[in-house]
Image 1 (tube, rainbow, N blue to C red):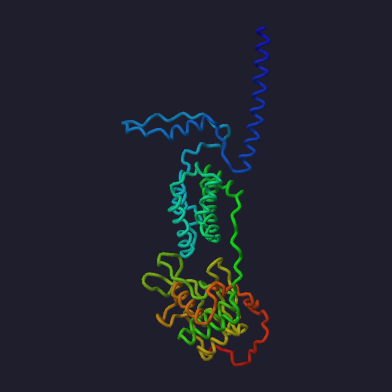
Image 2 (image 1 turned 60 degrees about the vertical axis):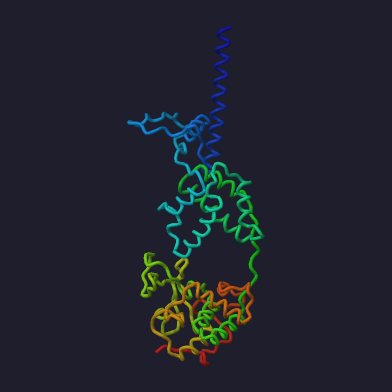
Length: 377
């Protein structure tokens, strides 16, 4: 009888070991697929116990190190230094040298800070371990309150970015769990904007700019509309002197970068410009842009400058600041009867703009021998 019992016990133990081995193999496959760690229930309980226990008073000698059982696989570690809260994650994101945040340009970084500051202000104290799909959805609803779908969508996009950083760079288990949850969630997408700046709008704004003594904005509008340039590429931007990049224009400790310059216009009236985003080199044939040629003829009488920024504020004699340019553009657009829903950024995606931004592309209706032709001297 005793031998039979021993045999049954051994068979039961062998069966349990086989099933445990199979279960662990399946679990490891899932962990590998979703980039997760796997820890035993006993290890996790020990970890929670340590985190929740009050810290001991300072002792003359450090306590003996805790002996933790080896994890079930070589690549599995207990998350002793895991991210606790959203605020902590945001702080690491902005300070860790491996973070993509450190590579952002000044303006883009400021925009990211606005979103992150709001996320931290609203939910910074939230513990990652306490968040789930329901709580994330409530966060979205608070940001999209009042039908602000674009705002809500922008905030959850930034939250995804924070969690992605925590998942990929920090290898944090809490971020990994929430990233999987957010990847399965679907948030309302704001409808695509249908507003477009038309040729008639651009022409009216140029006329209003001349009437109000702001021909520089008329030239900027022509360049933006016909070549699809964003405001930052047309007028440049001011950044702190400590930011990367060299400049010959410094105003109140801020240096001017990224704007188009006369020295990059050759004798054939081709403007070469490296875009502020992505560093793409453009070749823009000014002769094939009638609005631009009209402004050059009107403002420079056939003799354009050899160097310096192309768009200069009449008030300061320096390149426009972004805020002041937008303020004046809106004022001129209002005077020209352009709807409020249309913004300066729509200049770069005008619906009826021909594809003549690349050097050599055809443009119908332009007479290069007419009054709009400008030559350099």
